[in-house]
Structures are given as C-alpha cells and as structure tokens.
Image 1 (cartoon, rainbow, N blue to C red):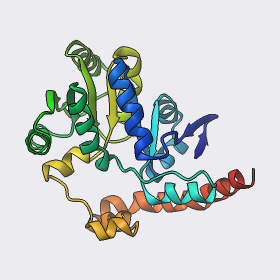
Image 2: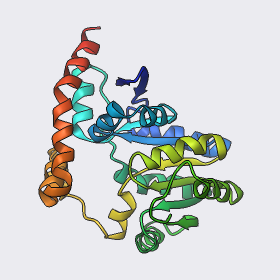
Image 3: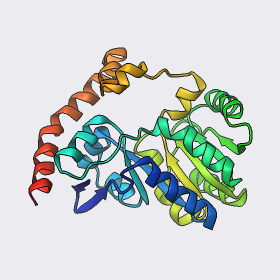
Length: 250
C-alpha cells in the first residue's frame, strides 16, 4: 500500500506481523539499525501539510499500518496489509530483543511513565535488558543539541532497539536523524505505547478494537482534544479512497 505527498512515496512495506518480526530479527542478528513507523490517518493529514514530516517518513525503513482506515484502504487497493498499531508492537519487539540478547532503550513521555513501563516490562519479559531510559524536557527539538546527545548515548551504550514515545512528528524526525547519526540503533516510533504499558493512559476495550472503533472510543473520551483531529482524518478519507481505487484499477 502506497501514499504520495510532496513527490515522496510512503509504502507500507511490512504487510504482516511475521514479515516485521523476521526483518527486525535479521537486523538484530547482523547489528543493523532501522527506523519503524506506524502510519495512520493522522499521519497522512500531517504529511499532507508538511513536506518536512513527509521527508522524515520517507526515511523510515519499515512501515506498518496503524488503524483500520489504512487496512480498509489497502483492501480497496488490493494491496492488503495487516493492522499493527504501535502500542501492540511493544511487547512482541521486547520479546524479540530479549531472545536476541540486545539492549533496549525508552525515549520520550515522562520519567514517571517510563519508570512504570520499565517495571511492567521487567515483569512481562524478565530477561529484557533495558539499558537506558530518557524523558526529554519540554520543547524537545529532534534537530537540536539535546537530540544529538541522546543519539550519541544510544550509540555509545550499544542500544539495538529504542522505543520513541515522543508523538508525531517528533519521533519520526528523531528516528530519521538517528539513521544517520546512530546507524546501528533500531528506532520504533510507538506514540503512547509506553503510556499504555505504564497505566498512565488506557486503551479502548478489546471488543471495541476488534470492530475497528478504537478511534471513536478515543474521540468520545477526549472530544475537545481529539475531536478536531479525527474530523481532519475523516475529511481526507474520501480522497484517499479514490486514490486506493486508482491503485486497484492500475
């Protein structure tokens, strides 16, 4: 499944979870870094209005589908991909890292949330080596000196997997920079994934997620903050559906 903005093509190139796990395992084995992004409608809205964000996304090595609308568009285009929200990827990636014996880091969110996420993961994956956690200060700039220091520390500590919980577009921008400044580090942009693990935020009930209505549950839980965001997402959906139909016919 492919999306194009500002003459840049963004391809969902990891269509299934097994494809993703096999590729990440291969990179762990060979000491290769990567940048993993989870594309959703909100990201498409941001790309539509930001050439810089689109450029950051184009620098990601691995892209999966986050959200039922992306999956639906892929089915319409007859280029079907599986649903893989970033928050669902944290635990499987941690198991993979533990099995490979590589070091893991958390960057983003708050110190309290990161500490709680670390505690939760050490119970779920006791053999996991969490070698670094860092909560940047307010106003964090992925292009600034603070980001350079984080990337150097990740590289110096031999981190193979760094979960970025900075939110879009900052996490994808830092991952794109990291591919140059810390090429042996694997970056996974997972948004609120660590906050869910820590209990600081709560996901929709499982049955709501299974019917593809997590976005509606989130919008109703925080209408003032998320209502306008989802309205923008719905506004671009018809145009993306037309493009998907064009891919199908092509």
